[in-house]
Image (cartoon, rainbow, N blue to C red; front, side, top):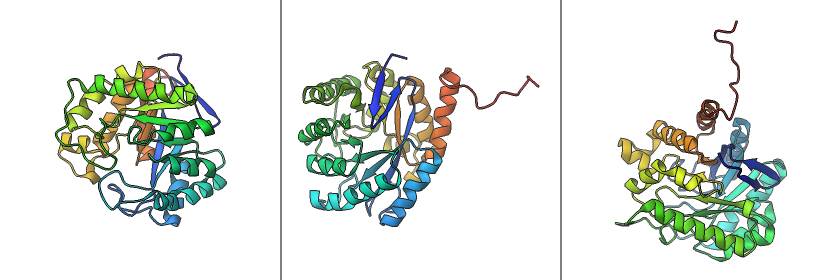
Length: 290
């Protein structure tokens, strides 16, 4: 592990940190939960549930990543801004992230109390990092291969996908620093499945240590992704075991933040890896000692 330190909101973390970011979708058509947290009361229940389960961060999104009905900035704001404000009021110490690529939405949610802008579309709106700088907020830079937001990759090719990911993420992070985002508030994410086929996502996972070596906090979004489903030939609702296997590999390589649907199972995997690696003591040790 390196001497890395990073800041999210008012909290500081180091290279040994393994944080759980729980997904809260304010959409009626999300690929995994099928809109189960579309209603505001259900979304609040989800936040309370994941906080009780030990999530470090909640990531609130107002638009599903896949193609679908066009959602303008005003509608996206209507779905997330007041909700962020209400979550902040109820959970003053919770780290709140918002999944958006739009600078106007980013500004609105930061004014409402969010801590992190999770740009899942690789800087499609270059103004987003400028907003993060203005508010001294954290920002997640992602690699998407330059694809248009909410489109699927089609026969996308890379000479070396990890090299392309590194080049893109370093460029985005350097630009964020150049416009005023504090270096310790920048997170990088290879964005499994985004702008990638399953072979690419598997290669990124296999070589994740090369991204950790860049010395930026690393986020991985593995939960129930298509690369897991295609690896095991399983539908969305049956990908937990494969997701947790990829999570363990990513944790062993040194990733820091895990964007997930299943908090309890992920926390157990991360804690087990932390104990094996020596970053965390066992919860108890009685075997052979009594």
